[in-house]
Length: 202
Image (cartoon, rainbow, N blue to C red; front, top):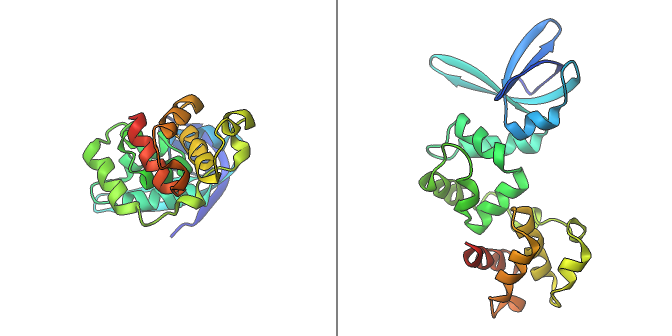
């Protein structure tokens, strides 16, 4: 098994890069988001890899961080989600956003990926919801301007939920409006409140 490859980027395609390592060019399939962060042509890079084996094909997949690689491995462990669909999901959602979507049961965010329908998104949520914990992926309070969060005079779980919704692509105003519709918001934990808020936004 190849754990990682260090080399220089000699080609950038829509779904892969060509990485030169000591005169050997490795085509490594990856997500659009990863391609944007890996760098430019002729730049040295370290790519964490996964070798996908099929009867008629060997394909190398890679990411600039182990976090992204681990998320990819989790996705392809889901029934019906292959490497192509996993890359599609990681092309529209960061690992943190994917985890929050899974924990909140947010199929809408996952179906933004090309080729992933409601059923596929539902399987991702069902099979991965026990793999992550909400508190591990909620952003810090500094991720959003203080004024937006301070406008809700409540505890940390509401602030965390506002920040989580913003990280999923909703505006601060949408987040605050949704939370204000939940009468029990002040007594709910972050994960529970996030699920309730998403239902009101959608």
